[in-house]
Length: 320
Length: 320
Image 1: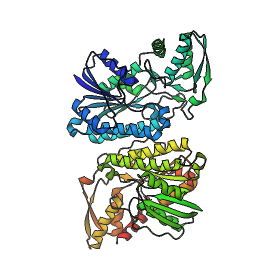
Image 2: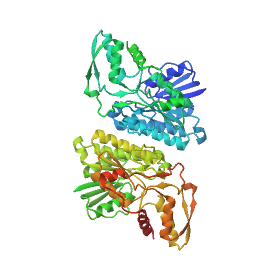
Image 3: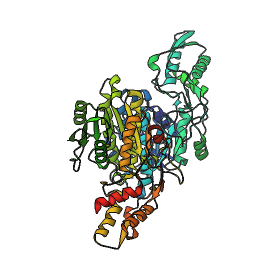
Image 4: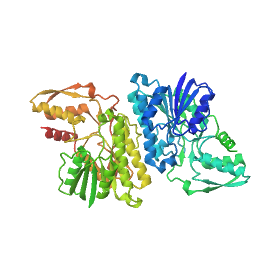
């Protein structure tokens, strides 16, 4: 039976991950969740003992003491700034913060004598943002050159590179992801789909028949997965991923934000007109980002199971 | 007539760059050189006025005040840890230090209002180490994926990525290099060829007919240029390089360290036997790193002019 440390447990993915582990037999005995913020809305799991600590991962000493005492078999690293638009507001802060966090976690993992280091396996969640630009018709494979085009992406390139060094030369045991867009119930409406859902559900609740939706560029094509599929992928990667390897976590299919609005219209039976808000249009966003699922499927058997329409229905249900 | 700020002016390349600019008409009126160490061995140039300041670039305030007051047209960034083996002794320090330095330089360049920012052009010297591994028969092109395999290389990937952001979104004017191995008179014998030359010249001066040379892995194939060609490339890139672009600076031809020893034997007329010192063999060093010169030739017309044999002869002359 395993002990698992989860950083960023209070975030969107962290909360789904806890719920996922509480629903399957994953061999977990004890989970320590940590987060920078008080853990509002975290379920109390039944299947394993659960303990929460509110700490700042950038503070090395505090984290090291906690993590050493807990002595995890698995470390799932979800913490850090994850919003591209937030990273633009203070690029250096995002890069420094995410950089310090990964450096501190690696420092903890190197504290053990070399021969015990591989005992703790880390899943380091990263981002498809490291690719920068995809081409029409292209499914980005993991071997694709990285051209990070925003501060958040730069921080994730650094995370990948720093991890590769410690896997190769320090005997650490780490599987990394490049997670593409994912959404689902519980995501903050700082992100695009929850923002659409909230606006349309509010109109529906007000009895409106038609609604004007404020959006950025809705021509963008992205590869969206359901967060509940994504946390299952993380579990499979911990079980079957290869040390030092990086895996896309994605659907392998692109959908435009325009198409998503069409789907929401259909489900909610609303007339929607779109108003482009220039403040929401970020110049230089890549038009198309779609990933290849080949590697993760080949090595873990993971395939996403929840169709986007179901995801949207569940998000609507949460709001209504 | 231009004002030029050179960081790391006291290093191997910085000293050659000053000497180069003192020998050609490059349109320089004034040069401010800065370095972390006292500038031992720096020539006093005749062609332009020259001023030196000993400061630590990681100290933002001091650098900003100096650089703002000087108000350079060109900024040539050579400073930072440049030894792969030194970067292994304290990986986090190398990464943090080189990272802080580039962040501070970019912060200075962003201080001006947007419309004046492109007035100062920076040449950011980076490294072929970002590529990681080359294949036999392959000339690495700039589009090749980056797989940094040592801490120094990670710091240079970060430099590239951070620069790209500020070129795209902050209106900065920066040309970057991936400089491959370069050597020549004046290089520290922490580096491989000067270390060979010193050992062999000492034997020669002692009147020995034969000598045992301590080396690491001499099968390694690298792309060596003469530092005097390299500084000329830097000048051409400042004049003709494209903003935001990255250029290999290399010969386009690989030579093994074994072959270099053969050349030195020949020039010095010495019997040399090689003793592999395991302490000098760094595991995981890429066997072959050779670059493509196509882009820099196409866009600046630069081709290296000094054959390796001449470089070696000049290095020997310096020692004898």
